[in-house]
Image 1 (cartoon, one colour):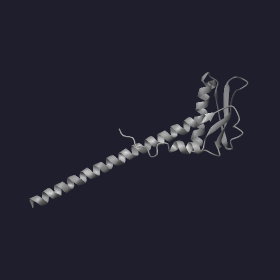
Image 2 (spheres, helix red, strand yellow):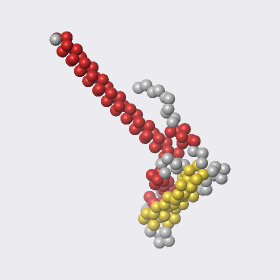
Image 3 (tube, one colour):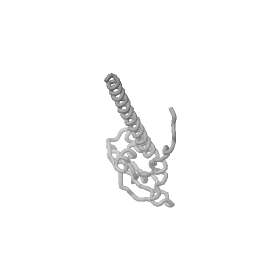
Image 4 (cartoon, helix red, strand yellow):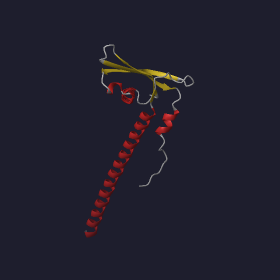
Length: 145
């Protein structure tokens, strides 16, 4: 009887340890998955370029659509870095898995000087293998802490 209670206690203890380690492994996997998703988003966002020029003629592409916004005139409204960042953010929200570039970017101040209108054309290159490679850059790597 005494051995039976010891065996039962041991079984309960082993089960508790196994269950807690499963939860720890799941939490670690979830954290790793979140890191990978954040990495992919940063890489995708960073590779989007914005230019007032046309797309290179030697690189076939598909037009995804137009991105436009208007806002009251301020020094920030005509800041080129801010304009590019805002266009990228808006376009990435619409086409997160396909956006490669924003071309024909332009900004215009209204005749009365009160409003700034910004626009660009969102495109995806027919061959977007670079994005696919970047998404899998960490595959197969073993990192020890």
